[in-house]
Length: 190
Image 1 (cartoon, rainbow, N blue to C red):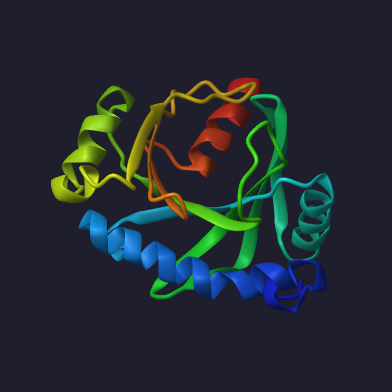
Image 2 (cartoon, rainbow, N blue to C red):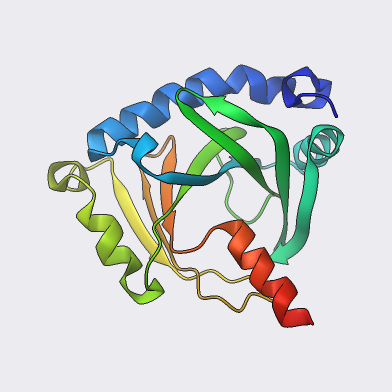
C-alpha cells in the first residue's frame, strides 16, 4: 500500500499539513497543553464540497484501510486506519476521520481537528478536560468551548465530546477512542 503523501487525490492535504501543524501547536500552547502527553486518537478533515469528500475518500482508499463508513447526524463519515502514521511534529497519528459536507460551511477545506482520548467516566469528561486547560486561554474572546454528546447509529458507548477551538483549528476530547467504539459495536452485533 502506498504512503498517503504519494496519493495525487490527497496532494492538497499534504500541502495543508504544515499550516495545520503550526496552528495546532499555537492553540495547544495557548491552552497549556503538551500534546505529546496524550493519546491522539485521530485527525479529522472538513470540507464543504461533495466532490472534495469523494476525491479524498478515493485517495484514502488507496493508502489506508477503511474501518467504517457510517451515517452520522445526517451525513456520511469515513474512518481510515493508516499503515504508516501521519507525522505532525512529534505526534504520530494513524487514524483519519473524513466527514462529508453537512449543513455548516467551513471556511477552509483541509485538516480541522485532532481528538484526544481522556479515559475515565463519560459523565466527567468535560470537567476533566477543562481542568487541563489554561483559564486565561479559555477566557480569551477568540476561544470557544462546546460540549456535546454525538452518537452514530449502532454506537452503544456514550462518547461525549469537549471541543475547544480558536476558529482555525480545534482540539477535541473524548473518553473512548474510535477503535474502542468500533470494537464495542462489533461485540454488540454478535
